[in-house]
Length: 273
Image (tube, rainbow, N blue to C red; front, side, top):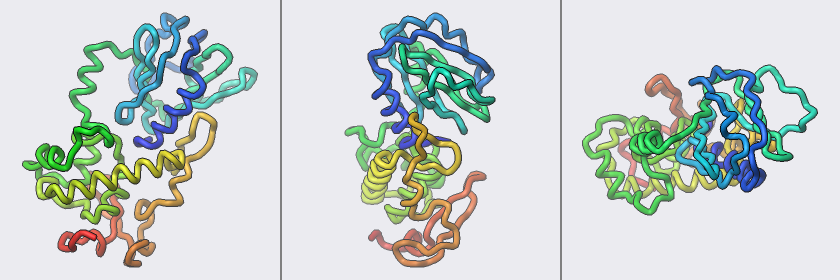
């Protein structure tokens, strides 16, 4: 599933090509996504003012209303030439003047929905802060989790403290912060959170610059794969040497998902490096 860097890469691509343009046509060939795509004909004629990202969601801000988009597990956007016929999994076409934007989603787990004020408030209520939000201090993060016994990796995935980290970047940030993924979140002190937040921001920034990480489905709107895969320190590298200490990277299951870590650099008893 796309994480913050992949969604941000898509956002920037959409903003570069579409902001200021009017939606001139929408073609919905398959409305059965995670939730049915509602009629979008009322949006024709509206002008796109900006494309925002909140966590892993895209918010298309028009001069009248907002569309919420979530890419799900396999969704992606790509610009296409008008003469190119849609493929089997090309479910929705958005025509913004001369730009044809095609939504493709083989597993049909994405979302395209109008977002009214009440729904946006509900979304905000369940999302944590953005990684670069000035309010997200180590002290605040520690306060929000001080009673939790849940593993820190699972807290990062939940996204109610800081948004954007899925399996890939949670593993990577915890490695760079020297924190064991199974450590109870409530045991992290402010120094731990300072390292972890700094690691999250650094990993996100590097991944955004690389266009994200492509393991299977992610593509930018220009059809390019994300290049951060070649820079992953531990994710997907079970049995390979840790880039810091050369110990074999381990994989365990947490909440039914694979977690990759270095048993030496992220040892619970190891002092921070």
